[in-house]
Each structure stands twice: as C-alpha cells, then as structure tokens.
Amino acid sequence: MANTPQSKKRARQIERRTDVNKARRSRIRTFIRKVEEAIASGNADAAKEALRIAQPELMRGVTKGVVHKNTASRKISRLAARVGALGQA
Image 1: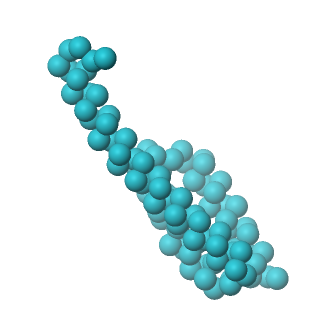
Image 2: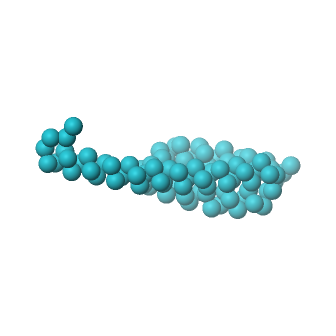
C-alpha cells in the first residue's frame, strides 16, 4: 500500500490511466474485429474500408503507448494481406 503522499498520488494517476488505456485497447480490438468480420463475410469492399479506418486507430494506440509499434505493424500487415487475398479471389 502507498505510504507517502507522492506514492498515493501516483496510485491515483495509475488508476485513471488504466481506465483510459483499457478503453483505448478495447476500441482498437473493435476496429480489428470489424475488419475480420468483413473478411469473413467475403465482402472485399467492406473489408478494405474497415481496414482503412482501423489502420489509424491502431497507430494511434502506438503513439499513446497502449500497443507496441511492431505489434501494430504486424496486425496491420496481416490484415492487409488477408484483405488483398480476398480482393484477388
């Protein structure tokens, strides 16, 4: 348990940041899920549009420190490959 005033304040700050970061992570997952659902439905146009909207959201998570840069890049790359394959099929 926090004892000093500084450590008590840090504990309060961490609590607030945790809620914000949790919401951001959830939002990112929602955008990724929308892309995956569009891919599953076989609709190439909807999948491209969903990916176009999801990319900046993922990179925003990187700048906010919620997701590592390589993780976001990997997810975007894999989704883009799946969407591209859908367009060719």
